[in-house]
Length: 438
Ligand SMILES: Cc1ncc(COP(=O)(O)O)c(C=O)c1O
Image 1: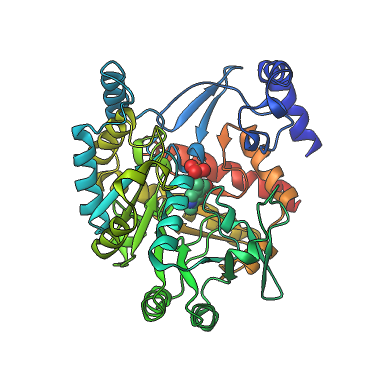
Image 2 (image 1 turned 90 degrees about the vertical axis):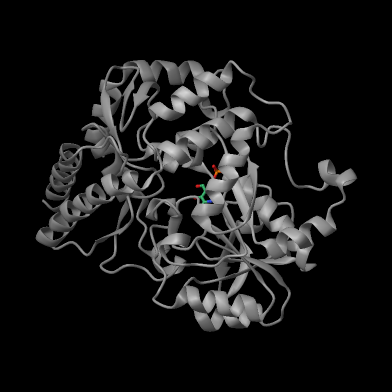
């Protein structure tokens, strides 16, 4: 680690200088606090990016397997989005009035995800907050059920841990407004009896779930789990909100379309506008009627749902371009085989080195984890985490021109990623493992 840190510092003098300067005006030296969570002693400052690559201010070029932790899953500045944004930016950015693009986007989201009515938000965090509010307003129930190890944005209700079966505040949660036990019931993913027990009191407004967990390593649902989740939520009058923000990696209609899920609401953000901030949430016809009955037109601006910049013309132009011309079936035909190639390379190194690790894939997203078998829930996934090892592998890759996603060992494949790019990761990963194992 010392050797890799030394190399990083020596090779990035400009980023180092900029970070020193930034510390005088930006809290922590960065515009957003997560940007210090990279494995070097300072973050790289980016000069420019295109497709699957970016260049830093010291002139090094990187293969980007992080892609803004999914915000740039489309590749950086995809041409159709760049064109649409450039054209719209000169025709007005935000009006608090709709443009025709909004209808095209609504129709396309309806076609992809099956839910008939849509609203636009700025971020997936906002979409989840609004979905929770709708669920509470519609059901008159207070609690939200989430899974241990989940992440749905900075949504207070979701900053929880499980401790001996009890829902408690996540240790990292800074300044929570109330004890999350008052707002949230948490259980482990893939545990049907726990789900039934948690929902039977009929006091939970909604289950908020990623269809496959992607923020604590990757946890795929057991066969039949989603059928049980849908049956128990229906039986107990609990709404089911599926968060597709990351699992849009599974196909054009996310995991929902790929596996025939039937949620009451669906939320999505990050890559939906090709990197321009935007998000969306969809509701069933029944919920649309029940929500409309509860929010008077006179109160719509102070209902707790919506925001001045949400649904702005620029975001909708970008979203339309991303949906119509970037996140197409061809996008997945191109990226999924490359993700399979990534997995095969990592698997071969794990197998030949005998390390008790594994690698898992969903669509164009792959993740390796430090345990021999895929975890079935958040506790199992958390137990396999190793921050030191994470940091070392990330820095090792970074020093050799490859950016992995911080917080975990995730790689996302963009349409401009090439087979040679994937093979360069395979070689680097194998080299790191060889050095580690001696
Ligand atoms: C599944 C999921 N939902 C929502 C979010 C929140 O996205 P944002 O930070 O863009 O609001 C994230 C962020 O990582 C996420 O992984």
